[in-house]
Length: 213
Image (cartoon, rainbow, N blue to C red; front, side, top):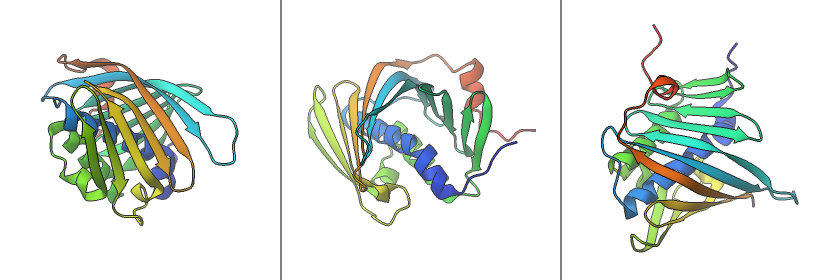
């Protein structure tokens, strides 16, 4: 049975990686070519989390797929297999093949707003992102740095962030996230490829936002 969790908990546990990758999309488009209709971005990530009061570093790694107009597949492979999918209709989290969260966008407005940021950044419409973040970019297309600073400290998700610092060249190299509680994260992006081939199989099924019949 699918468990339904209060949306502030979902915001912290499930949506934060989506906010990170949304910021990556924005920075990529600010400094490089945007994804065209029908294209997708595939890549891998390695994330290191530093939690206040904890001496050891928490490390995870996995892969992602971004598709304009369809959504995001964010797959953690280590240390535990977790799949998070965001589409215009919902956020879903799947662990070991079982769906443990399913949050409909119609029930929780901030999900729709996150999707607007994600999809808008992919197609070159940055208005949703600029509504929540002050954006400062330096450098050029070969080497650049973008800093996102939340504009609304009382926002339930963006308000948890002190800043997001994104660096890259042709594509994103890294993202550094600083939270207001003293925690921080470093995320490196690897093996990124833009594809013109339509999604098929599981990826196409996961990003199919049509209601089940």
